[in-house]
Every structure is written in C-alpha cells, then in structure tokens.
Image (cartoon, rainbow, N blue to C red; front, side, top):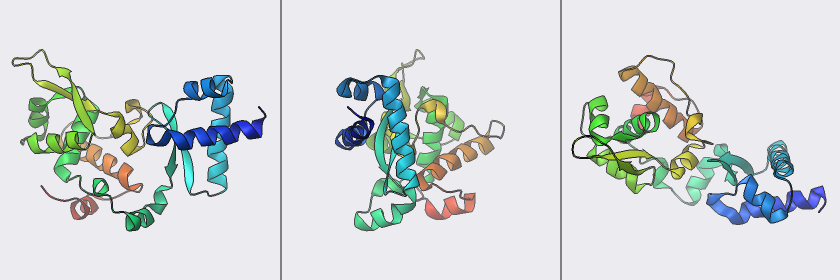
Length: 205
C-alpha cells in the first residue's frame, strides 16, 4: 500500500470509528502496517487538515485518534442543532466536576467538605451526562461511593488523558477551586473568560 492510499484509508477509518475514535495500534493492525508508520501518517494528516483550513481535524483524545470539528465553527453547529450539554453545566456542577477531576477518586462527603455545600444534585447531573462515574467504594465507614471522570469527560474537554489537565498557579483553597473551574469552562469555550463572564454565562442552580 503506497503512502497516499494509506493516508486515505486511515482517514476513512477515523470517519467510520465515529466518536469512539481508533487507537494507533488498532489502525496498524487493520492496515497491516508498523504502528510508528501509522502514527507518522496520522500526524501528517493532522497537519494537512489544519494547513488547508479543513472543516474537520484529526484529534488525539483519550489515547486514540478521532475526527473533530473546528471549535471556532461552534456557533454555526449550534444553529443547526442546539446542544444542551454545552451550556447546561451550572457553576455548581463545574465546581464539583473540577474537584472530582483533580482529586479523584473522591467521595461525595469529601467533595462537600471542599465546597462547603451539598453536592447531591451536581453529582447526579454529572453522572447523567456521563462525565463522572462510580469508581468503586471507599474503605471509610459506610463504604461510600468513589467518583472519577469518564472517557466522555476526556472527549468533552479535548484531553488526551487526565494527566493533561492544566495545573492552577494558585495555592490550595477557594482561589484554586475557582481557577480550576474556570480552566474547565475555558476548555469548553475554547477562549479565555473572566470570572464575570462565567457569572453571566453559567446557569445558577
């Protein structure tokens, strides 16, 4: 298989893989080519789509590759089909998600100790959106549920892995939680926002 054909086949594999994406290892097995060659071709495809200003991109997310849209085009996609998941994360939900993302695995009680308020509603909303999930039970009294983020969380925020989360530059405490919450929201919007912008754009619980 020549280089041009290999690139074309890999692009087709990315398309049929949908939101799940495909790992370089699986793609290499399908095309019967060395994995390093596949990675090089995928990187070349990434550069090509970006350079030609294509409407889709090749993104490396959660350990695999998948086709994504260009974030700057989001307003047009929203006109076609409004997606509640982009705007329905309240300040409370984002704060809870930030705590779970950075401190996982963590129990509801521990989350509430950090936030200082009940977290039942926020946890329920995050579970229903498949952003967090049950990661087992703590050894503490009553064996409470431990929560952690999902693969959908990585996809939603465009992260290759949980280690890709940006680290806040402030000390522990309320300021750190505020910064972590802001950083997650920035990843949704693809631009930097002030905390005043957050107050205006996030729904209150």
